[in-house]
Length: 246
Image 1 (cartoon, rainbow, N blue to C red):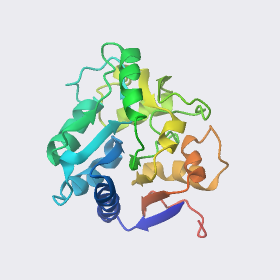
Image 2: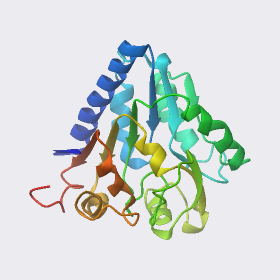
Image 3: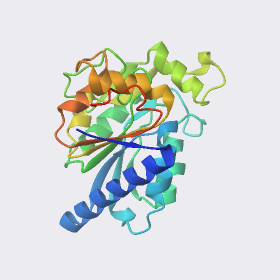
């Protein structure tokens, strides 16, 4: 695992976007297309802005998969990750090949449809974050490190739901859904490369736990240390609690 620390989230985002763009170009040079997994949430704003500003990427030949989605939200709800990805990635970049998770009608049918498509070929790069409770996608602690299913229906814990409220996606805690579709831990680890984008002071304790603590389902993102090709992008605030040698 490579850990890179920047003065602020803008510098972090630009550097991560440059690495992501390089990976996409290499994949398209080799095979004519690239396949990605995209994260959502407030932590990804600046990164996606920087990435979609790169007009030298052949975006119509990029196929995108979706990490997670709430169950029960409409596609036009302000907190919908389908809405987020359409507005912040798909439409801005011009991606024409994408697989969004519909958690509104029949989540099991969604999983049955998107899972096989996801596993039909290798993923070149996954963009992920780390939750305030250490979650990876919506795999809250204690996370399932064993299942091979591409997607799971999960129960969201209180810390996760409070993070979503704190980021301003919902009017009240009662409005935050209790269940979601999430890509599984093992599925995320199948990506050839993983870029972990984690700005902000509110993530500092989770970053310390996941990078310096035991690899454990209680710190779900700690499992990223078992992957051979992971780069973690931190800013001064999110890295504040790390030991000097980390």
